[in-house]
Amino acid sequence: MFFRKKEIHKPEYEKAGDELMFWSNKQNAPIYRVDFFLGYDLLGLGVYVFYKTNAELTEHLKNGMVEQVKQEFIRLYKATGIKTSENLEKNRQMFMRTYGVNKREFDEVYFNFDTDENVKEKYNGDYFHRVNG
Image 1 (cartoon, rainbow, N blue to C red):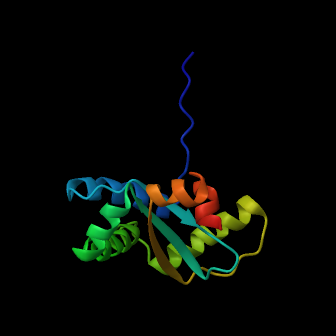
Image 2: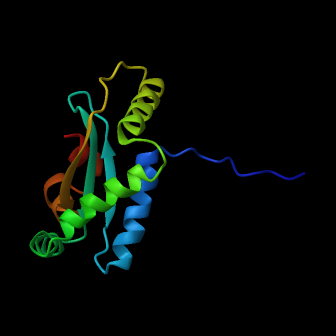
Image 3: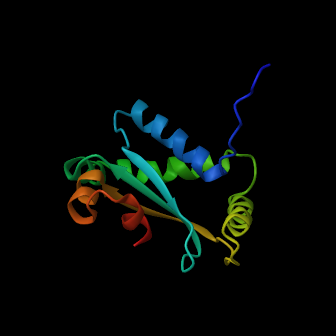
């Protein structure tokens, strides 16, 4: 008897986040982690990009890499073949089914850049509290 691995469906924004990390490695500017926030008071998709150190983030702010990361995420997100607003609506519906709440429509993508170093120092390494706090 053969068993198949259960295929886990990832929302489009998570697929774009995975691709963004791959892209950043090719740019010699590796991203440490990407998290997302679909919160009650947020009118859009929150994208949290983490570098390993504060020095890396400072360097990427100065050399324009942070802006390139934003543009690349939007490009990857749109590459799913449907408009960003449709992606956001699809993700809103998934959020509602998963958590059983009525969430306002996601209108935009918001970015926040931080570091693992900062999360360890200010949030005791707890990414949940950093992203949701």
